[in-house]
Image 1 (cartoon, rainbow, N blue to C red):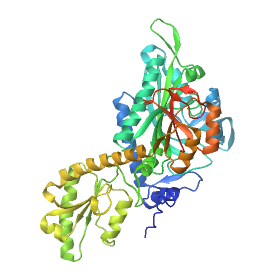
Image 2 (tube, rainbow, N blue to C red):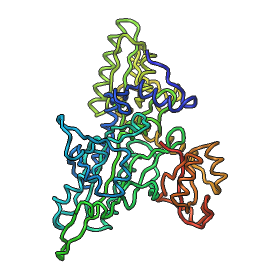
Image 3 (cartoon, rainbow, N blue to C red):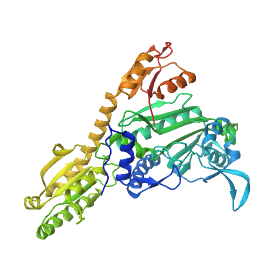
Image 4 (cartoon, rainbow, N blue to C red):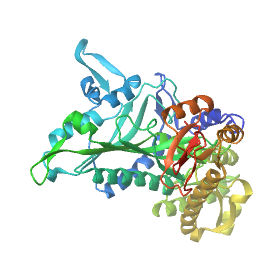
Length: 481
């Protein structure tokens, strides 16, 4: 029997873990900080993969694969990079029972090994741009972990590109940020804010880092995808050069960008409610579930006959559908079970519906009677469910957008900042002219950080809420995962 899910208001962190357990998305592994991704959770990740991978290929990128083990000397070649990642490295010193001549780092990210490879692949301007992505796992020795959001080993994609000029590389960096935002909004139904990271928050070794920031159901922020312009930092470290059209040797400008299984956590927390998951139809492993209802054997035969006909019709139309004909479970249990798993649409078929040649349809995004439609004709069920899935997808995005906007606050002073953060939380939008030390002080006092400097900032000139300096720069602060 399933355990009760803790309400979000009672304990949001416990709710999150309960949903992952009860929906069978993942479980802890014997190694601290690692997780076993169960089939339902992996299907959700596969939906993320397919959504972004399709967009990568549409923008001219190709997939490849690079080694899991990276020589320690590679990591040490780029100064900022090694300083940024040193605390998180997992290092292999023994192989085959013998001490290695050089320690090997288990991939925390691949800028170094890919930079080494690109130095051999790129000789001329004709070899550019080089647009490569890889799907892989990475290891970062995290002291505090949480399933999907932050684990020692996680799955991700990392794109790495090389270009002839800074302008081309910056264009690529921003293009991939748009790709991530398009996926988040249109597939995951999560409204995101596109912005640039501050010097303190940017990727180790980058010139500029860009991010999409999402608001979770408790008002906290989640960095959901990043894109980095690396300038020629890694090109100098790994000698990535090309001959331009005049025969002059030039250093390449490179980029990197990635999303990870953290996106699964974003989907859980952006849409979930006290009953469990609410999955956007585009990504839901099961888009519609059919629950047959009967009491007598004769009713069972008739109901299952109609249910199977509806299942086949939906499946033929490309809808991911499941017929739940488990005899040992009551219809009420099945309703709760599929609601907890976030299936967007439930179709109920009982003896009375069979007589009327109709079904009952329930939407997961609207609980109770509000989300139920009775007497939907079987003859038009396929088109009805197709339209319903589009409606639910749009409704989840609308709800998440309204929640984010209602929990975004404009503040003008540090006193107001602290008061609003404690009483209301959410995103705090401010004029900002502070530096690294100011960010550190604010985080120490409030646990809030600069999530991004939004690219869309129509506020104009103002006074920094912390330093009092005049500025046209806007920042979003929040507590974050």
